[in-house]
Length: 217
Image (cartoon, rainbow, N blue to C red; front, side):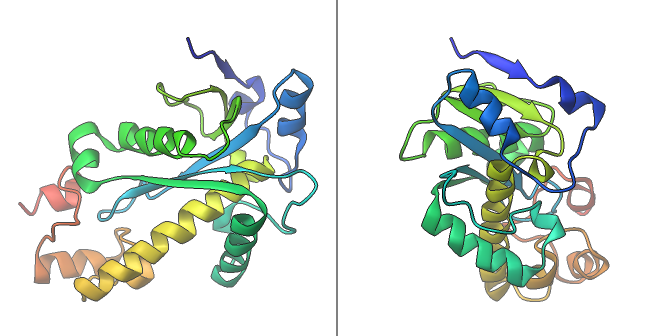
């Protein structure tokens, strides 16, 4: 049976100024040998999949400047994305719009995380999960870290991979469904997006379980 651990610091809002390797080192001292950081992107948008990434970093070759993806410019995210791909072991997975509508966004985001961890070419023996909940079907033991993308270098790397990957998906979808501004808003409920919903209607990539979309149907 998979063992689960919750880091007590997660529930007191402890945040360091920049992520480091202290969380990973703590588990290495406990006997873990391969640590994966896990994060997702796309829980809030009205359209598109939710995307998760799992990253195993080599402590001797960590890209400089890793941080919570939301705190980085697009140019910096793109640079770090390439460096993490080159230096680390990376797996990306998604939950579809249909799965989001069927399961709810929380469970769908956990499903994407489970798939990302399972897809790593090297099996981790511990996963650090961004947030305060642990996906129930992970293939390894795990701990949850609130604001982990600002605390753990591995989670920060995963946050960058997940966000850049999903943003690129939404840029591609914007070419197929112009007018919603997905190339700029990544499917989030901006004024432009909501006005386009009224003018252009609901696409197959909209999440029908989300209130602004549901109310139009």
